[in-house]
Length: 81
Image (cartoon, rainbow, N blue to C red; front, side, top):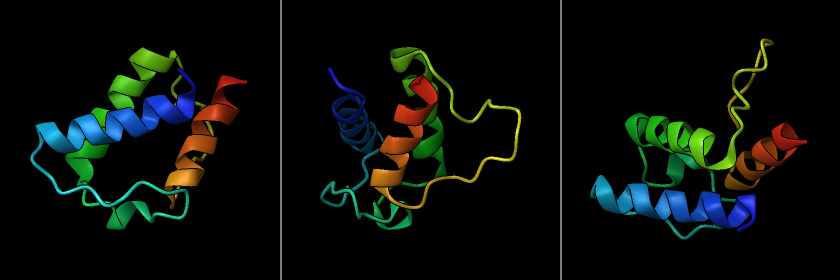
């Protein structure tokens, strides 16, 4: 499964578990408008670290959180390289 599919599936799973109404997933979806809250994103990033084997937030430098879903996917893709 690609990182994109894994991330989309994780967003949907966490939204279901946390009983959140998830906006339609598209690259230009602003994460703050996704329907998920900070707890959801904490769960997502922790699980993605386990599933994808990468933590793009642990680079040691200043990291800006992605703004859109497309940026979020690229963030993980770039960290995996």
